[in-house]
Length: 250
Image (cartoon, rainbow, N blue to C red):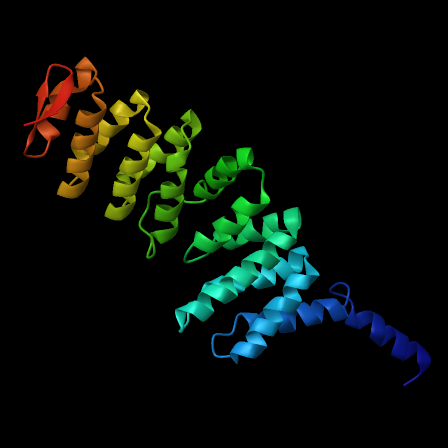
């Protein structure tokens, strides 16, 4: 092979883009180790520590994979996840896009949302949660846990934006999601939710959710608009009744 052929071959090898750097390969290697449940604990923990020291977007993306599984003993699992979380937070704002991407497909959001909360300013955290919730709809999903976790975390934020975002989930395909959404709506505490609550009550088949709506309306002493009183009364579960524009527990 001549020199020209050799150089041409070299150029062709990079046709798809820049060749992976040593750092890229190292992150890939460490990320694989950190995310392997069957790896030796020492090797996995050392990989987590090395990735944490890098404090980059790519290292944060690799560390997020440690949240994909749980293992025994639980204390080791907890320690490794805490270590991975610290490494992600160390990357600062560079970790935000990797966290958002991870949330799109994660089986559980507890740890990624914990890292998100530690990175963003407190007054921006609610907006981040709403942005993640916007990735979900009310259709059936095999694992509703991410929706439940998000909706529960939004309980502490009393705003119109949260109310509007959560109300549709009161008619979600999953009963636990519906129950969580109703609970969050009452925690947000805005009477503007009454029409959505009555609509959910009318459609609801779960007695648990019906009772939660009726009890919440009674506890909050919210007024039911005149045009909704008949359907509200007709949809109440046993043990509740309407008295004028209020719902009362019998």
